Length: 117
Image 1 (cartoon, one colour):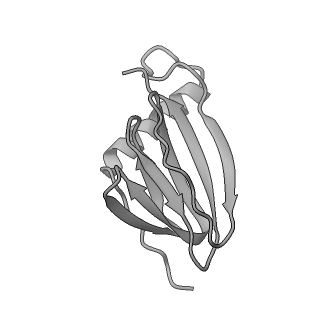
Image 2 (cartoon, one colour; image 1 turned 180 degrees about the horizontal axis):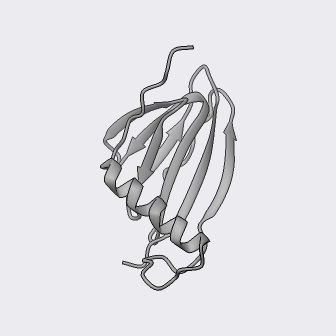
């Protein structure tokens, strides 16, 4: 099987920093964390031809990990990003985004983290 290339819309260091915070939280250390609540994790499954509505989160960062299929992500009403299996995408709070699919559906995991900056 051909390996999939990851694509980022933010520096990988930011992703690593956030997951290090998650690890400290899981170990009970809440002293130096930016977020004060446990992240919300859920699974999304959209059918072929899905057309989402534009959304923005004032105080939540999103991490998307695509596990199957492909879709198109519109960022800040201008940047188009094709996402597919194996991609990890970070969407900071206050960034407009909209997802759509064409011939294939998409399945991904979302990790939402409160941003108190």
